[in-house]
Amino acid sequence: MNGNNFAQPNQLRSQPARSLLLRLFNDISSLVNQEYQLVRTELIEKRGAVTRTALSFGFAAALGLLALACLTAAIVSGLSVSLGFPLAALIVAVAYAVVAAILGLLVQRMIAKDAVFHTAGQLLPKGKPTTKTVEEQEADVIWTRKRIEETLTALERKSDIVQPLRDAAVGMGALGVAVTNIVREEAARTTKT
Image (cartoon, rainbow, N blue to C red; front, side, top):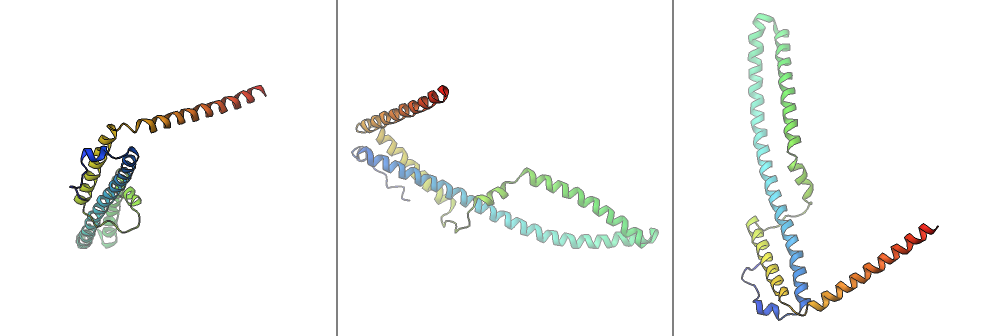
């Protein structure tokens, strides 16, 4: 969006109220869409960071498992001298099972506390993301907000908007009276029966 393309206040005031209301509706619709796209892009970027972190963690975990295997062999070898090989292997296996259970509970609690990425994944539709950066999208949002502000300022100074609003209010009031009368008549019929 071009941030330099703002209307002069007198230009807007000279437009009829209907075109200003149409412009306001279009700008608000555009703002909602832009805000959605901005949030979507931010979530996609966070998901990318999480993916990179998960890959790094997976590589570190693989190396850690290799180190753990070497450590296990050393511990079993050392204990087998005094206890025998089967008993030494059983002791190490039980110790690992206890540690694994404790770590499993801790991870489960951490995931339960922060289900943000699960929810964020559901918000993202399966589609092509926008090509704009977060900064460009933020600039679009600011530009649209400024357009809405100038349209509202022009509408505040309009004199030809009073009649359509009065007609709409009278029409809504008449509709409310008609609905109330229908409900009262129906209620009166049911109480008589």
